[in-house]
Structure formats: structure tokens, C-alpha cells
Image 1: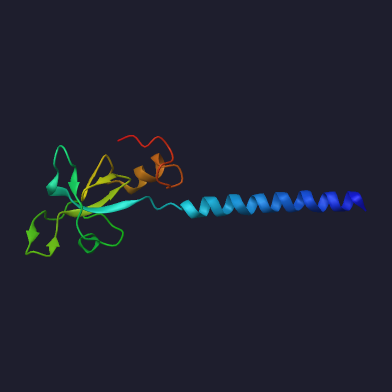
Image 2: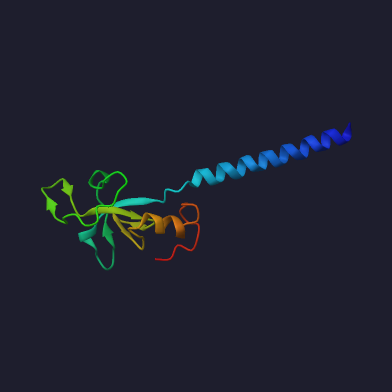
Length: 117
């Protein structure tokens, strides 16, 4: 009887541990932290100016499109900038490549991995 209880407990621990591991990995997912920035606004000290998300397309890069401001609301040179350091409305030390951000960020979690720039 004691052996059965011991087995039950150890299998419960293993299954519980697997659940915690699965939850941790899925919480990170493969979507790195991203900001919508104006590619034309780079400042050597501050980085790229962060603009409204509506200026970036939902999941694709706007690379190669015209890079002009059209009116006061739409920035056509906007693109997603991944895993950047954000400060005062600017983002720097990130990448425009989503796949590179996932590779260098572990499982897409901010702060994990080497994070180089």
C-alpha cells in the first residue's frame, strides 16, 4: 500500500512538473516584444521615434514601401521594431527582423538570451 502511494505521488510530481514547464514555454510563445517606429526618425542618441501601432501593418514588414509622412496621422515609413530598449518615446538597440528577435531572445521572452544589439 505504501509503495502505491509513493508511485502515485512521484507520477503526480512528474506530471505537475511537465505542466509547469509547458505553461512556462507557452507563456513566452514566439512573439517578441515589438514597437511600431518611424524608420526615418532615427536619432543617434535616442533611437527610433515610437509611433502609433496603427501605422504598422498587423504582422508584416513595410520595408520597401515609400517612406514619407502623408498628412498628420499616417506614417508610411513605420515598421515593427523588435526587442528594443524603450525610453522616453524612443526605441533603440533592437532589430527590424522578427526571426532574429526570436532567435536571440530565447523563446521570445524579453530579457532572456544574450540580447545583443
